[in-house]
Length: 276
Image 1: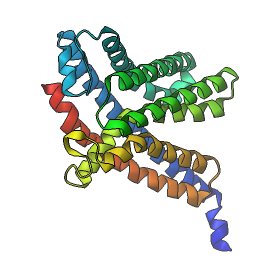
Image 2 (image 1 turned 90 degrees about the vertical axis):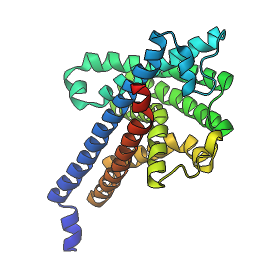
Image 3 (image 1 turned 135 degrees about the vertical axis):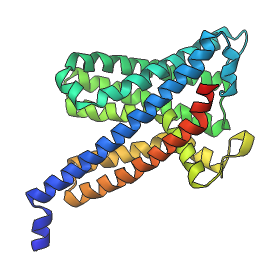
């Protein structure tokens, strides 16, 4: 009886809330660092090649990337890459409470830009995937398509609730949109974490890039983070102290894994191409 009372005491609730908040801040800081490193890579590699007029260099990374004479597809691909840079750079700013509280006009206009840009990027990405193809075969193509559809749904819901000033609902849908939009980034980070943990490309599928892990992660790269977000929102709104502490612990562990994946992606995939 005393243990139950202690668990529900104001002090315990305060500790649980602080732990959950700290885990969320840890995740946010780690994610911002990782996403802005990805921005630097996009700007350096794709932007650098474009500025030099060497669009063929994109094909060092992309399957069915730049195609000589394929004007419409090339424009769609270039637009998708530019929009991805804008989204990844500006998206995390929407999650900063200080900006929401002290710079509301910026939050609103950056949010509109973020959602509109993400919608266009999703549509151009769909076009590029189904006209130019992608690594990983059908699983990757279908996984990307589902991700794009979910992004468009979450964008529509976030926009709808913002218009009617239902801020709590708007926040939840905007967070879902952010997680889904980050699927491309999560794919790369998760892939490198998997390779590091297994000390090699286990289940990747070699040059075909269609191994069992790739087929799973084509969907898991956005569904797994989305599931974690739903657990976090549930813990934040309804869980008792024990549930919040458990969620905080889970988020700390997962974020540490994300950090390892970021280091692996930066050192193994992004930095060599930026330096080259």
